[in-house]
Length: 180
Image 1: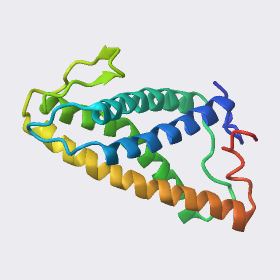
Image 2 (image 1 turned 90 degrees about the vertical axis):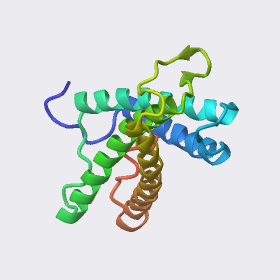
Image 3 (image 1 turned 90 degrees about the horizontal axis):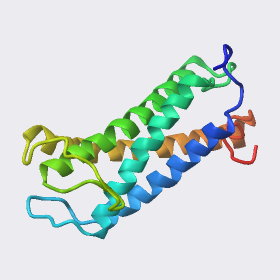
Image 4 (image 1 turned 45 degrees about the horizontal axis):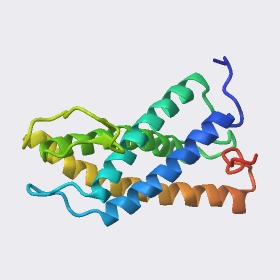
């Protein structure tokens, strides 16, 4: 672990970032393709894939958080206005919160609906809520809302990266590109 934050992201940080981007994209596709989950839902391929990729997101985000704590990187250019630095920090913290807590909320909801969560059918995870547990059913609603917030954050994040690249020309986007 270094004493000074790095100016650029490490290759590991970049790999974890782009892996999460891919996994979240897959998650939104599976979420749109799978049926609504209710009291009589039978697991199908889309639901199983959604659960599996949720588990992967939780694992990769945990690794990403640990890596981030070991190798901190400033989020913003020092010349950015205060409000921009605040919004960047808030957005990144919300990303971590949603991408770490969101899968747990979905897992709790699946448990309450008596649906097994597994990793591609290889490893079945234990239920984390009792069947029909009220808190876990509410967790499913919170999960769905959090994912819409995540989608809005992704749009804001992409727009900010493009703004920095096209308008500001300050190298912010290049710090996370895999080829830089």
